[in-house]
Image (cartoon, rainbow, N blue to C red; front, side):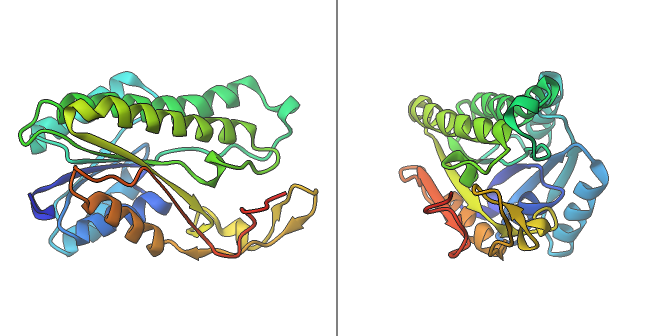
Length: 252
């Protein structure tokens, strides 16, 4: 089945990396469901895709809410009848805060959105993908460089992104019998409106503040397109795409 017949869901699709991925998928013939909390940005992205002749559907959803996730996937079933690709991208990064001062409510919010949200979407994707014909599909998780190495004062983001790696591995294993492939892309310093502060100055492990190099977000989109375009017999289990000179290898 070629990409013109495939259906993708991108969470957190209204801005940043999610927006770039959604537009790239639409340019390559995917019908794309764009999910996020705020409907207006999603509709704007869908309109950009429609200008290129793409089929897109914008749906307001709270991925931390099981009922909202179930409603999202029910609309996908009703509107498209199948799902070939899930890009688990939605997430939050709490304000920089020392570990001992992080409010419990902010910790729980990060877990609910960054981890539980991806789990809930993965569950619903499994239910569609294992029952559809042709059977199977692909799930790609946005892990982040923080799935490997933390920034200072970012305990909730770091912990949830490390947990995404475990979710990726378990999903990859449990998906085998259903022809569901799962991989993870770990992205470092992609330039979007959400990461403008990185190029101006960000806290380092030694307590100093330095600007960090960034890369064009299109490189991330190209990487996801490659992962998504593989036949289901092949899988990119983990991929790191980063600004070459950012402080990751040897960070701290």
